[in-house]
Image (cartoon, rainbow, N blue to C red; front, side, top):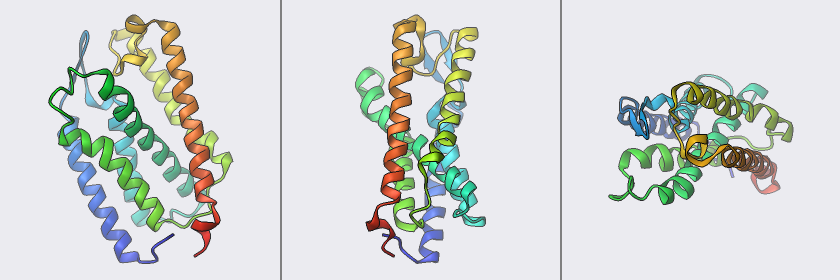
Length: 206
């Protein structure tokens, strides 16, 4: 389940980097309105996870992605971008009909659809399998935890939160904690699923 074609891998990665970078360009200088003001785009997990994907793709062009550090970095970026896409399409779009009344924009599709699907395909098509370990999960969960903590600290000071499910003033502290546990469980489950897929005999046959 791996294409042993280095030129194809390079071309695919460069194309995906270009598309995601364009989506970041369209997004980065557009502060988004929240209830009490404007938040810079960099405050959103979407933007940060897309940056992680671009960095992971770029690094894989110049360094070995098959050492432990490379495997952990790419796995962590993949989990983050997959959660980004799922939260957007399954939670944010249905919960904010007024914001998406005219449909999902191309900019949003790049950062929430093309980036996760494209990066997942890059892993499926071009990466050597059987290298991920369940112990990698303890590294993958670090960044999302720090993002949540940093966002909550910033929000408690500024009163601005990038997502409704992180805003205690809007939904209550109990609901925020519930969302925290739900999303943490999603990260863990997706991490374990990715490890399981990576170690399937089907993917390690060649």
